[in-house]
Image 1: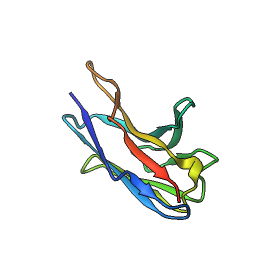
Image 2: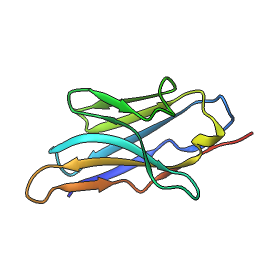
Image 3: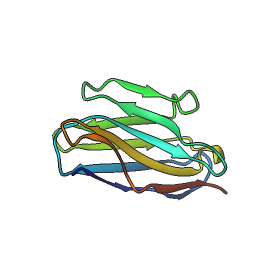
Length: 117
C-alpha cells in the first residue's frame, strides 16, 4: 500500500518562497505525481503534475512562479513556490497513481500554505 507523506507548508509573506516535499513509500509502481490545492470555499484544483519522463504541466495561475520536480529513484516530488501571492493560500495535497491490481489514486494528508503579511 502506497503512502504519501508531505512536508514544507507554513506561513510566508507575499513575494516569499516555500518548498513542498512529498515522499511515497510502499510501492515502486507509481506513475504521475502531482500537487493539488484547495482554497477556502473553493474546489480542489490541480497545481502541477510531472510524469515519470519528467514532462510537466502547470495551472495557468502558477506558471512562471512554481516548479515541480521528482526523483524517480527516491519516489519523491517537490514543489518550489516563488513569488507567492495571498491567493495561493490553500491546503496543498500530494497525489500519485499506483499501477497494479491493487492500484489507484493515492492522496497525501495535506499541508497548509498561508500567504499573508
